[in-house]
Length: 148
Image 1 (cartoon, helix red, strand yellow):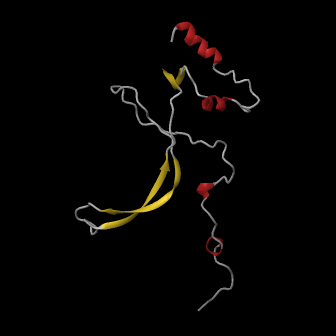
Image 2 (cartoon, rainbow, N blue to C red):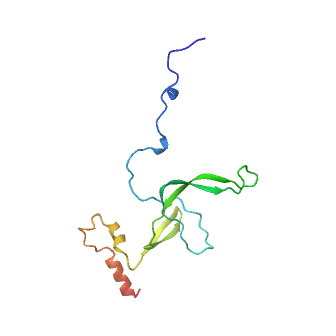
């Protein structure tokens, strides 16, 4: 028998620590998530909500009865992992209209609500405390001139 005192491949001697799927390891640019894909639109249906924000709050487990005829676990209890998703309350503050162009959809116009809460207006300022809080004041005048 021949035994070598040299190392085998580095892949086996010092495997990497952690998945490359989590790279780059740095602080996120924005705290809120972003909906990356939307379901295909059906023109026959009326306008409806196609996305909703949710945050992963954690995981737990549940005991459930399995209903799979032919399976060994049919009509038996099974322990399964579940994800808890926290969905904060959502308030509609505006609607964006899109126009079809040769390169795809383009934002055509945005219509904001007549009365916006201060919580919404804070998002448009870097420093809410120092600001004059004048955003959307001209927009509200349009509502009063046009009669709503």
